[in-house]
Image (tube, rainbow, N blue to C red):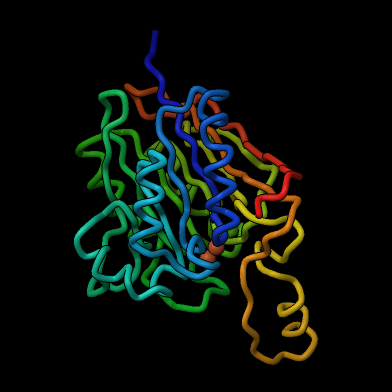
Length: 269
Ligand SMILES: [Fe+2]
Ligand SMILES: [Fe+2]
């Protein structure tokens, strides 16, 4: 029988709410889906903006294999020296080469090497990076010299960029999943050549919010176009969402992708 790997990929965990929600549910999710490894997007895990070394340690303690990020990666300055020394937290690979950190890493899962690549889209994003497609293609070629099991987090605003990258990489990677919009999409599928795809994993955070943040300041900003400070919403109900990808370990092709969308009404705080 073909050995399979079951990888859980979780969307942007938003602030303490997202972290506590992850801690509350992760063991049950792992058991329910027989998960072999977990990858989370942590770009919002420190009060909605960025990630710190302590939070990286929190994810390690909870047996996360790799943390991906996005446009908020540099928001907490403490992570910059950390990322120069560790590739546990990735930054989008298509940032300029001078940036600290790495956009690709490997880990071992049930004896198989797994590559994780993080890239970021350019449409409607606050920073303009190198071409994510070219960068991903280069890294995928590099990774495939070591393993056919490759997971890509494409952190982008538009469906267009995410699905385009997925079709470019179809058959060459195990999965392309999107992050950044914090809203899970309903298009989980296996593309023709065996790559699992989902436009967005969603998030971990309060549903009584605007993509994880308190509503009032963001509504004020929307109505006045003035800058505001916002913070993670803390009240129930919450959502923790992501996807489980089942991969044939010998070929790296995906056999299935199933979304996870847990709504929790029990207050965390
Ligand atoms: Fe995010
Ligand atoms: Fe983002």
